[in-house]
Image (cartoon, rainbow, N blue to C red; front, side):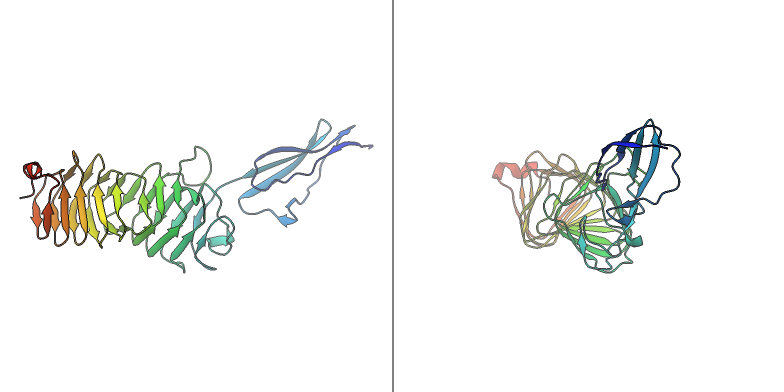
Length: 293
């Protein structure tokens, strides 16, 4: 069989899914045998597949890549990015749009998220442990295709997690009974929260809550000011320290207990109020609009 090489391409298939013509030739390619395919000189990873086919005078490489569900082990360090090795089960390296699980069994539960944009996940679940996340943001998206779990949300079903970074999930944040999340300095919630457990604001920095929150226990501690300015807010609120401002035209639906600190603003609390600190509405005539007494 005579082959006349017409064109040859060098393909860098890392992270790509598609079909690539490696070479074209005149004549007939014939039948391809079984060939070992390597990527950058190394065997394909568990999330990669590739096949060679020959037809119509072309040698074609078809590659595909899947996003698996990853479980954090923290075996090497606490770095969560797209280059760190040894921190996920089965030797995987995190890629954008993977689904991630933190089950409390791994080491290094103090986790530094990658710089810049941070990381993007198809969903995130915490079932145990006491994790702290800092530095880069965590973005939750909902891919329409893929073999991984694709919830687009943060689910905290057990244990606790402190976020000293920004988190936003397209399908929101769910906190189960017995579980807890905490927002520390540098952190922000960019998603609605459905809470059957505990949400704690523990900051020396000021923060304005604009994401809806529903149900559960909500605790404000530390010295920073918390401004409640979301469209819908409910649950059992406990103010242990610092200042809370309930913004104008906003309503907290549920009981409010103040053990210390200052409560201000001209919003409305619909439940019972047990106030042991300072109450200073913004304007004297607004006191009647704040049913706290």
